[in-house]
Length: 360
Ligand SMILES: Cc1cc2nc3c(=O)[nH]c(=O)nc-3n(C[C@H](O)[C@H](O)[C@H](O)COP(=O)(O)OP(=O)(O)OC[C@H]3O[C@@H](n4cnc5c(N)ncnc54)[C@H](O)[C@@H]3O)c2cc1C
Image (cartoon, rainbow, N blue to C red; front, side):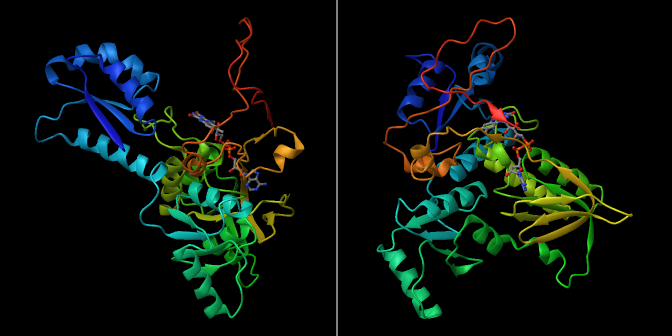
């Protein structure tokens, strides 16, 4: 179930009680409260605090005929966001052939999810899996390593890392400079979280030739958030992945080039009027200006046996794909996001353990 709509006034319960119960029944469905014009403003007063707290997703005026685009836009946005974050895609652009517990396949799928590629995993002995394995044998004359990946752009490949897949999808930084002519771009941005994406949109829209180099997936930390409610211009909230994809598309429209899956390993500042050199294993970008927007890296739990299981059921801020896989299972959360403010009492313990202190 993708969407639940309730009127703001019900005969046997309050709308807030209804959305609370429906949330328990279908936690992933988007929830909308709709009010008739004659009590819209009165109900807004009592129901908007629940909206601010995320108890439901939108408070809308009951459509009354033509000029009801706002209602339909809101419904379409909520359905679209649900479709790309919750639903298992019916139409895929990438298929991953691997067993369920394959560590690399898990990382590839996390990357694909964060990059907005609809995809599915198939066991090697499933119908689709066996067909793709057989096709690889015929085309390559060899046994594929697993995971085997098929995409409409890639055909069949056997990546050995997320970087392999990213390079196949998005190319290498040295493709800017195929003849080694030392092409100099105006702006190179390191890191494609919200800060890097904003820099790309504003740099490119001012006419600068702009290149973004990102070590992992577009969106940074924000890309792992299931719902961001406080970003300017998105009154109903937006998933981090969708926000990142929209920002990326906006930057591309102004001519930005993205290289994803390439970690910047060195930066040599400009000398004698030459360009800055931004170094990756896939080539060096020569740039007149560099923006470093590399964000933060989270402290890991530091328990060796647990670290060995990352990607096999243990996740640090994983994408929505993990939530789908865990449906019906037990989930344990470590880290309660506790903050201490000066002058405040220490927070009461929460059910989760640990904290989210970050290292810059
Ligand atoms: C789960 C979650 C939910 C959140 N929800 C909200 C919210 O609802 N509202 C809100 O305001 N904030 C939220 N935040 C915080 C918000 O996401 C961060 O403040 C924001 O992402 C910081 O943006 P940034 O671009 O500075 O850095 P980051 O998002 O950290 O991005 C940095 C990027 O740089 C890349 N990078 C790092 N080193 C290199 C390198 N050497 N070479 C190439 N690339 C590199 C990283 O891979 C990363 O993609 C949330 C964070 C998380 C984790």
